[in-house]
Length: 102
Image 1 (spheres, rainbow, N blue to C red):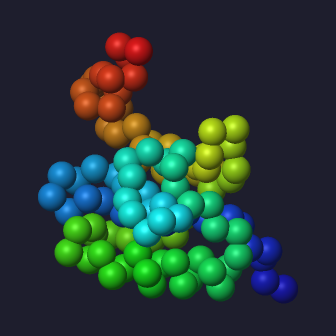
Image 2: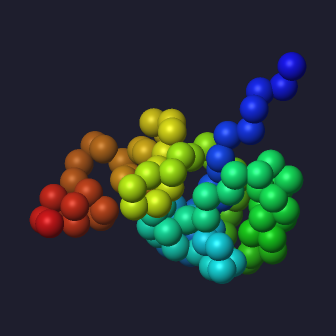
């Protein structure tokens, strides 16, 4: 018996800057996971992935990943995606440095 569908978001990396980015409901990309479109239907997820793949000149490594609804938008359900959105943990820089200064 197949597993039930888990809500998804679409993620990739910006081709020029390398940042983790997320696909939004208005067919654009954002660096904030909380602004990503949470897709709750399997067929719709596949169609949205096809739409996102049209941006291949701007993004690389496009894929669907599990997510859940949170108070401020989608949140990761797996540590890998949580790690990707905050960046490397070997020293403070980039996103981690900005978060430390808030």
